[in-house]
Length: 220
Image (tube, rainbow, N blue to C red; front, side, top):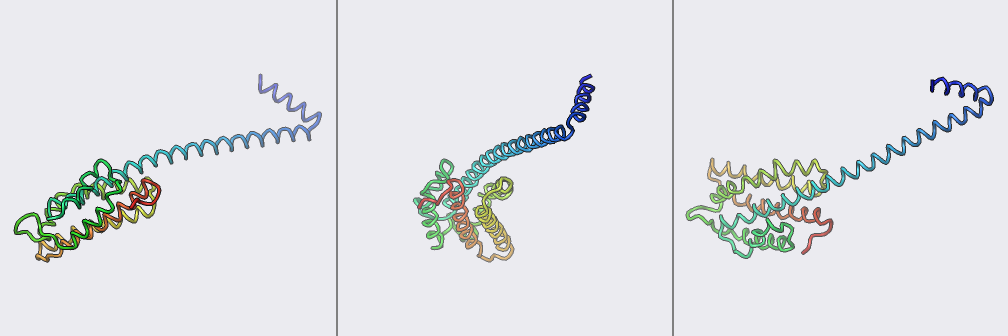
């Protein structure tokens, strides 16, 4: 019945003033289409904002988790090499505040100590021999960063500089593992330099994590 009434009035409109009627119909269609476009645009912007907010939370959590693992990896050196206690203390507190302003300077002090070829903590072990037990001790932390947290951060659209830092750190991890395999097969004594390179890479990665997390320059 409603359709018949609409058809009747439409026919009457065409008979009385078909030009005006068509203009009104066209204007109505344009208004309807414009309304749909505006609505879809607003909905899409809302959804984009929600996705951005959600990914921001994922990035923040993941960056924090990676920073904690980096502190664990570096701080564990104290158990395997004769290093000054004060150089590693900031890393011990990394599980509470992995973005502390004390950590970057601690990297510098620790690297200076490592470049001085400290003796292994285990008697009769060379620094390269000790690197094997060190790698085993931090293996889980290294695996979590490489196989769980890095893919998650890539999915969350991390900043390119941070991605580069993660790639650099993963390459240092792989190099350490390859050096250990070569040492076990031929006693090369070339593993310890890979430990130093891992810490150097960890310092660069940690700085990028601080920049990404705080949105500004890392504190000196």
